[in-house]
Length: 504
Image (cartoon, rainbow, N blue to C red; front, side, top):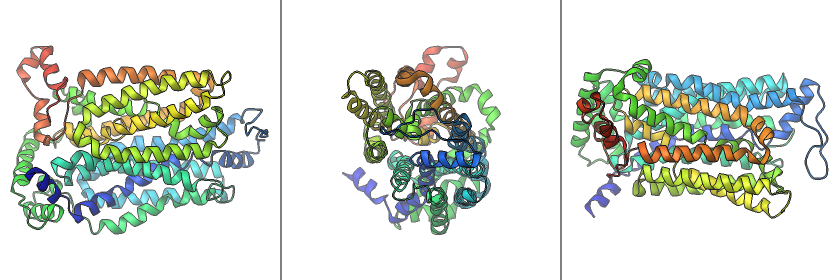
């Protein structure tokens, strides 16, 4: 009862306001992922007009008898995937800008990129539309690469240990909410029409403007103030703002003091040092594989190309089915907010990956037999919905905040940067290649993801530790147990601190 009361006391208006303000970055990130999906045909037609090539006629079934011109397909694929290249490059600078400017000012500064990118896309019809959209998506990708690192850092540092997982999930919740908003307003009778699609792309900068104003009222991360700047009093004041006026920050300051001493002894770790050091090898492998599994699960194939997938499945109104995916996506991300602190990170990740693997197999069977049995279209639709449900149970939200839990202050920025780059690289590969792979493999494209998901499930079972309810120090201590035995090559030691621990 006392623990529950303490947890309630730590949820203050300032904490909620700060988290909600920070995840406006994530909202825009999700909007950028989803906005390009619904108006695909309209934008492709505009590209064809600019490039002076002829688009194929649409038959009564709503499909084309001839393939889309290769030049249009290439520029469209680039419009989708260039977003990830921007994120891939900028993710390397997350740690630097976060430490140089502080968490709050860093988020303010990167909002400039969001506004510039949205203006380029909004003004696309005034020039070479494909070039302006690609440039705008690239700059927006730069912004999202930085934002997707800054938000988990800030939210993780201002959250109480007991709520760190739940509040960390808010990043993913904002992403899927952004995807859903983009899908709804991207309908052809709202902003997805041939006249208004530039507005649809251009308003992506609105959250950045709102957030910049609201950030003036958010407290800086106490961990940043104390560990990076040595401002103990300022850290205490901000802890009281975040936890409540009568909160005693002594325990938090002691924890930060230990972390600062530890950071001072191990010093700042560069990306190259992180890769080379055997001390960080195991947690780094875990972090990278978790991010790879998130992207190579096949979820972005659905997010980016869900409308065309539903069309091939024989769904008469594929855009509405895509919006249905967004609704389910959002609902179960909310569910994961409550589950992540009850079931634990590792358990949810295992359930999510295994469930997605089964759904991918069902989806493959349904699409393969669609021509023989019309009712298979409904089975494929159910499989896609369940696929999204299992994704949001674990693989969706957990990789974004678990990296910060696996590393101490010294290597944390480098680990976040490397993991972010890995995530964006995989995102780019899927965005650029999925359409071509889908065309080549036909209904069997998701069997590839089923095999990958099975491998990721086995890895998670064998290697990923539980981090629920543990302080940063307790988690990082697990990765440093019995160093002497590890140096002697005792593999059992590795399994002891990376294996199937479920300590809460």
